[in-house]
Image (tube, rainbow, N blue to C red; front, top):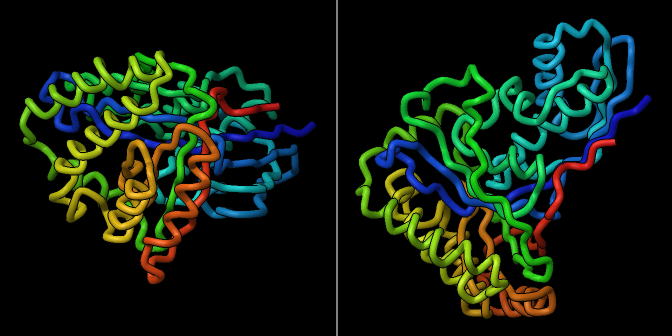
Length: 321
């Protein structure tokens, strides 16, 4: 028997209310994308073993799963591909859910994605990665009630998905990951969120209005221009919130230069995914996205070292077989 999982990365477009002035904390907007992806397979074995990328991380995740469900058998996990770690593309959640889903399938454990997320310690702030693993597409989650925001013990505390739309297949993102220091994670990320507390409630209200009256309708009406404009505006609001901890609207000067180049080359909207350093620009179709990539080469300083690729929406969840 063999269990194989393929899980896609996600772009995180921003938080709705990081300090909970609305009564719910965080709330997120995001999109599952087709590249890059985690691909791994698990087979029964006498003991636990892992080969491939992220070996230490996968071992720790598998041990956590096996302890939680009191599984006394072993497994061999082969990791074929991974999402770049700490780049802002949701690698941690997709890897954790991939390991858990493969082992659950292998040992016939009846647990849905939300239960597995809670078991693996995911969804503490954003539910976008969990919803992307479940069904893919364009996603908005409601964040968590302030009264329960500090607890991670219940599966019910995984942020609920309030919007899930299929995203236009032809819209294409130019994604760039500068080869610089990783985005914030772990204890540094927790401290950063504490420093974000106290932003004006009016800003969260403005962001919510843009989301409700511009971004969501533009997906349903397949209007890439309005979507791009709302994306950029939301990026500016979120960037101002994050400025005290990341030093500017974008986490890196390289990321800022890359999105400037994307805009000048014709991107309809730009932003940074989560803490970065990954940034992105929206094009109405793949041909336009390729043109943006070509034009970027003419304006991006040669000293900026970055991985640049195209990504479209993934309107389906993880593939588990």
